[in-house]
Image 1: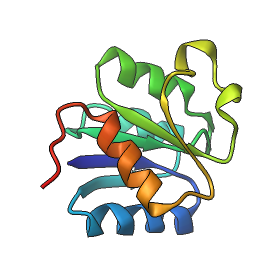
Image 2 (image 1 turned 45 degrees about the vertical axis):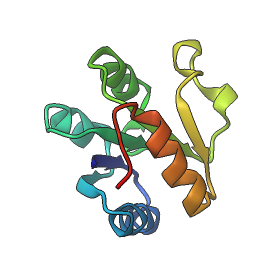
Image 3 (image 1 turned 60 degrees about the vertical axis):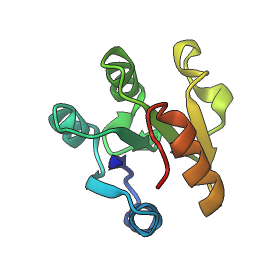
Image 4 (image 1 turned 45 degrees about the horizontal axis):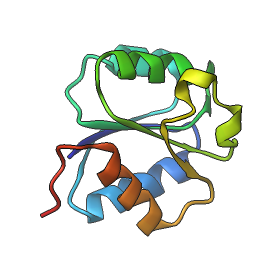
Length: 117
């Protein structure tokens, strides 16, 4: 899968990228701000990993745009799922600190057409 990462902590972004690439996925970009996220929404990717609190604010608008475009995403955040606005509370969510297996399984389940190799 081609995956976009929105994460403002470089160490966490690096870990996410390493985990995904070790599992055979391609990280199309790792970005840290809302401004960058909106610039990359037209890029071709199959799924996005979104931290909630990033440079420039919260990623809820990005998530809503992805929902409108039918692009799967997973929140990866230290926030609680209950902190999400009502329309986003059913979104896939991985709590930080995350376990590698949980992250990968959640990504697989977030993308209905994904078939593991």
